[in-house]
Image (tube, rainbow over all chains, first blue to last red; front, side, top):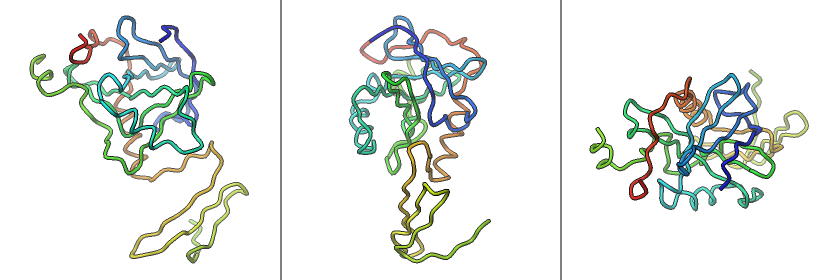
Amino acid sequence: MTDAAITLEMDPPLPGFEEITSFTLTPVPDNPCFAWLEAKNGPQFLLAKPEFFFSGYLQQVKTYLPSNFTSTGISVYVIITLADRIQDMTANLLAPLLVDTASKRAGQHILYDSAFTTRHYLFPPEKRRQCG
Amino acid sequence: MLVLTRKSGQNLIINDNITVRILEVKGGQVKLGIVAPRNVSVHREEVYLAIKEANLQAALTDKNIPELPLPAGKG
C-alpha cells in the first residue's frame, strides 16, 4: 500500500456534496485501517478500509457491482461517522466509496436490496464498553 | 409535472440518450428498466436521501480527532 496522497475526481459527486468534484485521499500514518478524504476548502471525511472491520464485506460488495464494472484495481472504502466516543464510530456499509486508483476516479455505490445500512459499529460491544 | 400514461412494454425517451421501459405493472407496483449513460445517476429517492443525510452527518469541519483505534486483535 502506498502512503502517498492521491487526488481523485468524484464522479458522480457524493450525495449532499454535489458541487465538490475534487478530493484528496490520504492514508493515515501508521494506521492501515483508515484514510482521510478531503476537499480543498471543503468538508473532510474519515474513511475506513472495511476488510479490517467487516469480515466478508468486500466479497459482498463485488457481487453488487454492475457486470460492466471491473473490480480489479478498485479500492473499497467506507465513510465513517464519528460519535461522542471514538469507539462508537459507525460506518456506512450501504454506500461504499469505490476508488479506481489507476484512473483516479471515485464514487459512492449504493448496494440496493442489501441488508446493509448507513450505520454499522466498527467495534464490537465489548470493545465499546471497555473503552468507555 | 409532465404526466404520461404508458402500458407494460412501452418506453419513454428522455433527452435522446435515456430510455425508461415499463417492464411490468402488477399489484400496485411498477417495474422499470432504465438505460442511461454511465454519468447519469439513477437512485431510489428514499435511499438516496438516506445516503445524503449520512454523508452530511459524516462530514467533519476539522481534523481534531483523537488517536484512531486499531481493530480488535490488531492494536
